[in-house]
Amino acid sequence: MDRSIPPGRVAGTLTPPCSKSYAQRALAASLLCDGVSTLHNLGFCDDTRSALRCIRALGARVRPTGDASLAVEGGLHPVGRRLHPVGRRLPVGESGLATRLFTPIASLCTEPVRIEGEGTLLRRPMGMMVPPLRQLGVRVKEHGGHLPFEVCGPMHGGEVTVDGSVSSQFVTGLLLALPRAAGDTTLHVRDAVSTPYLDMTLDTAAHFGVEIFQRDYEEFYIPGAQRYCATELHIEGDWSAAAMLLVAGATAGEVTVANVPMLSKQADTAVCTALVRAGAAVINDARSVTAVRRPLRAFEFDATHCPDLFPALAALAAAAEGVSILHGTSRLRHKESDRAEAIREEYGRLGIEVDLPDRDVMTIRGGVIRGGRVHSHGDHRMAMSLAVAALRAEGVVTIEDTECVAKSYPEFFEDLESIRIR
Image (cartoon, rainbow, N blue to C red):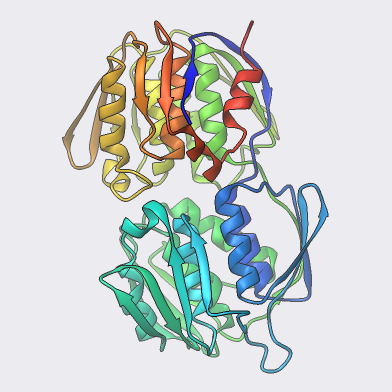
């Protein structure tokens, strides 16, 4: 589906969907519980639906208790307190987190489980999971480091080293699965990135009564044979989505984003730092943040630990006077698209000069944004970024393949239109 976004100003208050990162972690923990957990403020984007399919496939029983609430009965079988999958397929859809999160959890099963993905996920690297899983006693059948995989446990404890330089998501999967292993585990992580996401994982585990000890994100000690305790949990709003809306306010008017606590452990709270460096006005209280347009200047920002911010930062930098410098582009090669190249190509079509002088740096020269036709590259964050940039364009910007926003924020375009000043 193509969408044409005319230039204009925005003003209003929006509530973004729930954090899909927290939602997927909470669903995984609920699967591993004894008893029934209740999760509130759930949004049903594609990635959250992938996690729901996974927990059902692994034995959880799920029923709605309201428009945005679910009761999840854990999938542990009464005999042996192990997971017993309903079938032999784990359909992760196009979700990288679901793949790296539920593959270790499926490895707790004594039956073989085939991990199956679709779309761009089939091109994303997954080979980093194989050696650690095998060291933990899991039989793995794989195809050149890409899905589909087949795993068969049970995974036991021990001492294992994981490469954390590509993604923290597999570390998250191990951290949530290994408390259910029979033995204790010492997990060594080399070059951990996106460490705020690991804080989210530890926070989720603690909500469900599980203890994990860590030292400088380099070593984690996970006692085995722990029990996940059923709980009631409210999922906070998604800071990745909030970042797009706040940049819209900072570049084209004034936007307040509700249900996004400033003290959140989500990595993308860092967008507020970038907004202030760029000269925008940022006003916050306990549960909301407002960004107000001011004359914007070039800024420098390191997004190594919050790579999902890059598309939002690109829209911000395009509106700022001068050359902004963003660090951490090496994290973008294996997202839904090669986001560094996608930003360079699509913003170039709108007259904004984007350079990649080395593997970890992006420079963006702000200026006049032309109207024109651009492509999302099937990447939800690229589609949203280009829509926000279009608010400042000289003419209409038409974005191709916008249905991809369903991955994280299905109502994005409707929400953005609802705050447009007529």
